Image (cartoon, rainbow, N blue to C red):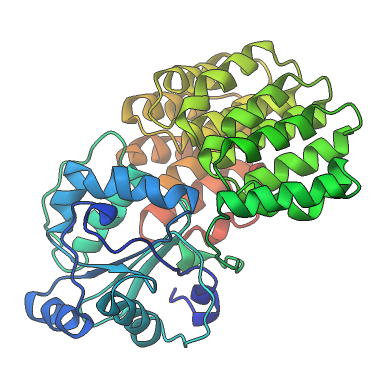
Length: 425
């Protein structure tokens, strides 16, 4: 399925600083015309990486992924473009040319960061993956891109290797305006203005999306006081946490964690979901600690998803998810743990968990295992999938197992658009 520009315009991006250190160690090509010439002459795909300085996950991708030894090795087999409209003149021209010539956009197109998109040597779009992408997902994307032109490309996949959960060719993503984070002086002025006004949540609500984009201590302390204030009710606390989830850098997890112990279920749930969206690996221990104390299944489900989002390679998460799938008595938790384990970056644990899920007494759990295998495009689990399909007696589960087989064979995840276990996720 080829994405339309309407879909793509919602998800392609802006940029970061112009120095090589701010772009990782990948060899980037800045001249668009030469990049296209090289792609055709060397029969190499084009990997266009879009980012924006100040976006919480962009810096993580640059610092970790673009310096990862395995990804650096894969990058030698593609023509790599680091796109930024805020760097050197050459970089600005490159970003414009990719956006207009390859993505068929225009000068006023609104983009979202981060975004990775790959093209065949002739400029035909293969995939577009919006937002944060793990190192394992990027590894899969790079390998499968290279194999579009070198079918026999040899590669020993790491344990983290899995298909990206978000392929823009298979879904549309909403637009969002990108702005740089506010300066310390801007925060100081905003806080002064709030103090002069009504105060409290309602006096600050309009400015909160701006305040939480700043990593300074004054901004964090202000929001912490707001969350703890006696006149801030549960619904207002939930609203504040959702604003943090949508706008704040990862370091804001320290502001959120105290809300995990709130007496109100809705507040705890919002805090868990916010930590999952922030994706800070240091919050995993806090989430697992909450799991041990939590007695509400809806919150426990959210903890499973948040924990794997923050720590797909974390040893505590690697132990927890297969255990829940195999041993928990609650069907919903087993099914959701099966969904969550698809994002784990430990092959042994994933295979252990999904094998147990295929053997589960519940059709819901077996169906969830089908979705998990399909979303990972995990060919190593094909024998287990085929055995489960042959043995399946439940019509609904058999439908999802069959859909998973079609995805593994090269299809898209379209059949899973209305998969019931994903409702609300």
